[in-house]
Image (cartoon, rainbow, N blue to C red; front, side, top):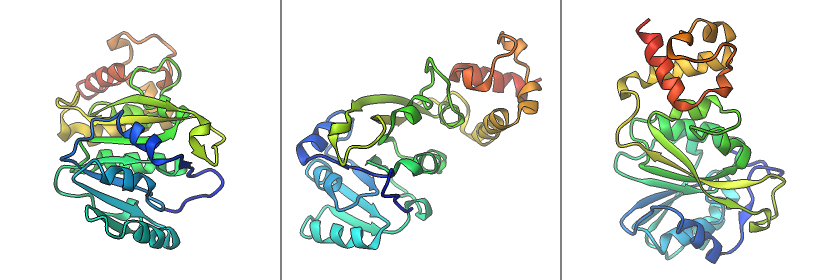
Length: 243
């Protein structure tokens, strides 16, 4: 899970600011929290003062060594060196709070939402444009990933960030998003794999989308996949599987 120095990850300014961001979440003192791409440990340190246990995950050996130095003596932080995308997720309850590498936002979200034991909530700092496409009812164009995870996870922006909130400042606007597991999914869990395949096919192949019963659920002719909202995808999938 390599970082790309030119656009991948930027450090948040100061512990007080990081703690302020954590305050915009539902993370509680009894929680186990994963910090993905922990770097030298700024977020892990802030989390450690607020939660039961922190798992700080870092890929780069130099950063991981510095992370170990910085977390020495902090008993409720466990450091895992390696690629998060290759790691097995825990069996018990956990949450995520992380400033993830921007270029890995999509594969990280795929991993944590498609696992057999996903987090109850994940708080991720991502590019604003990317975040908007995850929202179930965004006024602009939606994305396949957002529509894939929507039936099982609610997504919302918890706080916009300013470029001056980082060192160095990024060239893009960013936000803190919440990805929270739904108590009642919109689609049965045993059908989610078929649903994700359906969404992926409709977004990637116009011929597949053309064969869907759009008129049956009242969609206008000529509508594009990126113009549809989550509730329309759920309706279309249910109509498609019973046609």
